[in-house]
Length: 372
Ligand code: GDD
Ligand code: MN
Image (cartoon, rainbow, N blue to C red):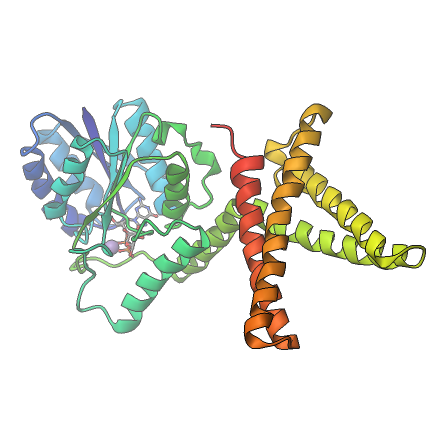
């Protein structure tokens, strides 16, 4: 098995002098693997390239990609990925920083999980045993942790504790080689989140191992203000994409409610309210069904009448369940707490919330389920 350790560098001469020998030492612990180090240099102004070339004289496993100009962290990694896949035929890539904030002592933990058959392994600061520097000011710890938490919630991937870690391993076959790098949303630090979401959605077997994220002793951080805004933009875009069906489903729900209300009032002018409500309810149900089929869940839409009719019957029956439960709940609440405006409306709202969860679950998981 071939493992390519990709390390982007920008003015890191002091750091790589220390890092490379430490890594070479760690490689010796794993005789069954063939290791490469791929350094992607963003046209450093110091002697980084000269130092690397010096190492290359003694170690054939060290490769260097020289960028004409700095293309951002994501840009540099994409070059490293392509090189590792095409030239080195690597089975795994490892992303690692050059500045020793990722400790070579944590390196073996990633390799252990590769041997256990995982597809994607994250060196994590936020699992038990992991840490950020205790010297970090409180606000920095706060931003780092809550930034990660915000992304996890917005993208509904709570399982992963460290969303932005830069120390991780990815299987090439079936995962890295399935990603179209040109489609990745960011050329900066935020590419990490985009890639993570893609790999998560490919149903990768994911492990998080604890790492101690160190202090940067030498050189300066390249993390800029604009990376923060870029990251926020990427998270929001991804969140819109991932929750697209749900957002449309809610809009359709409101559309249905208005259709029901308006039609009910129009028909009531001509007929008994009870009859009017039956018709308007049915029309609204049909309206939401068609909208959900051709819009909210359009990627999985049903087209033939033969399928649409039985599906509509199931849809109507299922959608009726929360309505029945809601009236039962309101009835029970009124018996217990009295028949007041507040009590009945609280019951109504709880019922609506249950209905949203119930309907969205049935629609997305059963009626318009993804074909596996
Ligand atoms: N080639 C290239 N081009 N290398 C770059 C560039 C670039 O545009 N920008 C940064 N690097 C290199 C640096 O030389 C270093 O080896 C590594 O990429 C990470 O850069 P740092 O500037 O040290 O990043 P950081 O410490 O602020 O951020 C790290 O921690 C974050 C989580 O807190 C990174 O690991 C991030 O990926 C991570 O999200
Ligand atoms: Mn760093």
